[in-house]
Length: 238
Image (cartoon, rainbow, N blue to C red):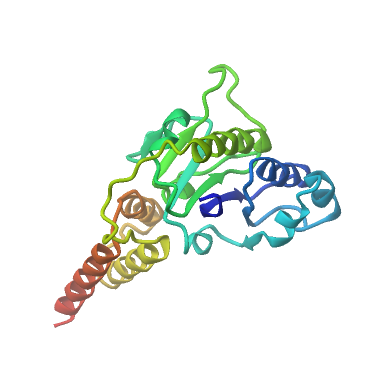
């Protein structure tokens, strides 16, 4: 199950933090690192040096320019944040992570040191996770946040607290399936000029993605919805 866990750093700014995150991952037997549009040259000597023995994680990491393509093989995305988000996305507590099905491919998303995650990035999430801390000083170092999550998940996987009862015949939709379905819906909505006024389109897209990504859809359900969207578009053309 350890190979099912991914850690995603979104636009990290400091080489030292990237290296420290890789070291923290190796401390708890994780190896799947994804980096989205890092500010420093990646990899570089400082990143390797501060990874202290975890350079293979850096060398095998995957780098993307945007978040969406990084999630094509992810089943559940959990975004970390230092503040409560007033959005219709499930908030999960650190001590409730044992309720997550770690037989699926799970990714934990961490925002940049300066700005964290925007609501746009959060909209891709199934859950939002807020690490408990001093309410008067909530800001945590990037690698410190990651190590807290990594240690918690490590403990959960080792003591095998999670029990899953969903039928094995039901195959959950991957992020790739959901992306394809969502993009098909957006394409057809654009064809009928749904997104208006134009200045509200980014927010409307954010809300639409949020609806689909937080749902625990099966592969069959995404195929059904895709067929519905395609049929509606065809009907419109007729």
